[in-house]
Image (cartoon, rainbow, N blue to C red; front, top):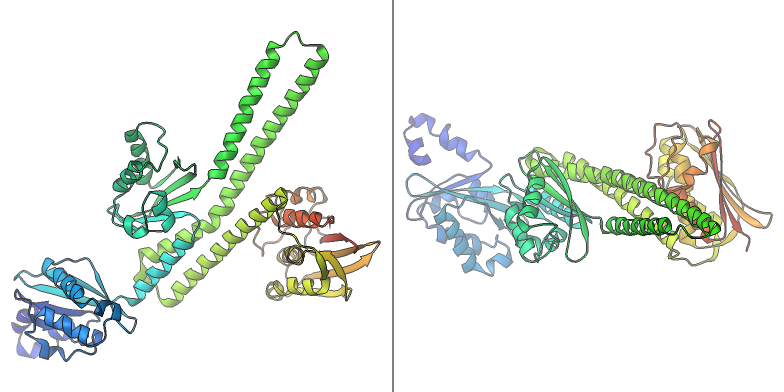
Length: 533
């Protein structure tokens, strides 16, 4: 029975306040068409969505195709769709006749996006539901843009294990031209496609490799490493979402695998050397002693390499995972219940994603800078630089945090017109890092003193605070990458332990030195010393 017929059976006094009145108050348009595709009912919201159409009462009895053409002629449909009017009409009629409940988006010229759903009624007719989906589509677009910008390969799967969203990196790794070509595939179909195109190195029979991959995907939290035929390696992490679907993240760990392979080769070479030594019993005592000493050194180097590798992988995993989990977590939250949040909440979560992304980018940039310095490839151009101007710029980027903690920052001890032969961007980075450390670690109401002088044939620039300080025994250790020492405050966010090592590396490129002075409870002072021009 149709809605209009059901309403007609109510007492006449109830018609305007019950079913029909309730339908007219909905913020969703409802239209019904009979078996001949003619309009038999519409609520008032339909005219709100398509404001150029005549009142819906005058459209009763009109065919669906004629109404679609009225929508096109009214100028409310975007020009790109209107230019292919016949294809648009055919697609609309196909959706109506098939009762396809999958949404069909209709873009309007004023920027709105109308979502249209169709389903059959029990009398051979069709009922159409129209709703304004502009806000949710924009949120989806922003989420897609965010995922596309990430360095990892991302994919989201529905509760039926169908790919609903991925970025270009994910599609390319699995041998597909674009995310659109991947969406809609099941996980098993995608893996078969990738293996058929020889995208992955199979460490065993195809069936067992696919089964292991599928087991990790189906687990609430799964992880494994895969290698591509192009020579890359990826850490694959799988996690179930609250909505019944799952997310897949592929992180490029090729460099880690190459380092592990090199270490394994060195270990094999060491074993060959040990075996050779054991067979060379007739070698003279002096040579045997020398080789034994060399073996001990190689053992120590191997142990040190293992420790360094473990420290690097553990620290990198933690420091990268923390902001990345924030990005994934808030993105999942927005995706799972987009209609549950207002603009303020969406803005807040987007801000948190932005902060986590910036933290991740900063860590990666610090690692790249440290790598360039160690390899001697840091871009470097020395020229006379005004120290006062660089200090002012570095201080300006930290003034907000200093004011928030009511810190007294004194820069009166900086000699005017003082020049130093340095790379300006490198000097700015060094001073910015030292000032940021002082502001972050100094308790509220404390003080930070900046000084710059020329004496004893060199230029000395110092940043000093009266914070809790660092034990003297730890001063040398915190100049090593990823080494951190708490300074007794609770109102700062600890970094990855890369700031001071980068400053040390940059000043040494200038043939200068970084000197640290501190003791527990007696503040902290960092001094950069440059050769005088």
